[in-house]
Structure formats: structure tokens, C-alpha cells
Image (cartoon, rainbow, N blue to C red; front, top):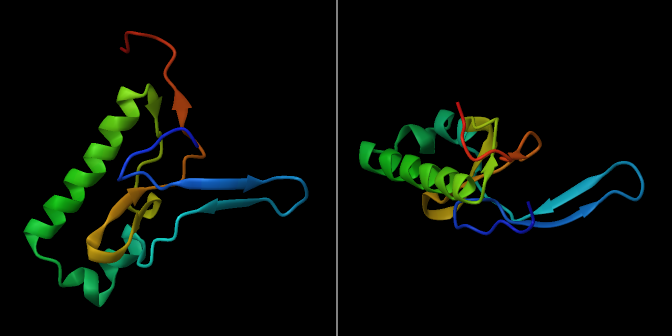
Length: 105
């Protein structure tokens, strides 16, 4: 996942696995998960245009993953992080896989 670069995918900086506990180091998103953000007073105040823009950014990130032959397999509001100016980035690639076939049914 470290090779995937898109404005709407969380950037992975490092993985530390020599001893437990293991650590995953990613970029910081100040507002936390989209799920918690939408339940907060700030999230409740978002207008429809902002929500549509956030959804479009998430869709753009998912389209990029597909173009790179990856699938996320766990897209949910809890796995999207929110930063400043309503920036959204897809995170938690624990279930992600590469697509190995050219035709999906």
C-alpha cells in the first residue's frame, strides 16, 4: 500500500513490526473518522454541497484504487479520516487485496 499515492488515500509512512506492539505510521488527520465527525456538532452543520464534495473525493480515491488493481473491501465511515477544510482520505487497508483477474463477475 506504500506505493499507492492519491490525494484521497491516507499516506502510509512506515510500519514497525520488529517487536510487539506493532505500529503503523500514517499522515495525521485532525478531525478523526468520518463516522465520529458526522456525529459531532461540526459535522451536523455541514451543508449538502459539502457532503457531496466529500463523497466525490471518497469515490475518486476508490476509483484510483480500482485503476491500480486494488480493492479496499471495508469501505465505511469509520475507515475514512477527515482533516482540515473537510479533506477526506480512505484509511484502514487491512482487508485490501490486489485484483488478479481481468474479468470480475
